[in-house]
Length: 150
Image (cartoon, rainbow, N blue to C red; front, side, top):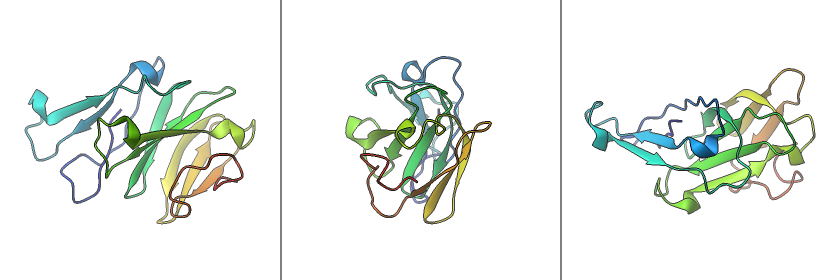
């Protein structure tokens, strides 16, 4: 996985994920775009093993502040993982998660997403539910489905 940072930061703003196994065993990786691509010091890895119940992540969306890694997992507890790009990449507190299965049983597999300046739109995998998250209000991930997801 590659994580992004604000446009003013020297970090890559791409989000790419691919994992045949649980993303908990595959670290998030950040690249310093002002450094030598081939230099190992240009890359920083962050283990996501501390996120309980993490399944496969597949793609992501950047809203100019947060990177949202989207769950590919189809099952009872698919987690969106969010990275705060203003925080230390290695800090556990920079990473939060939300179980989109709390919204609806049909919100369990996502194929991608987009950001329009306010809302984060999450595209369904197959016949599942499309989600919209208000990325500006509130500034935190919802505690339950009655938060910003509907």
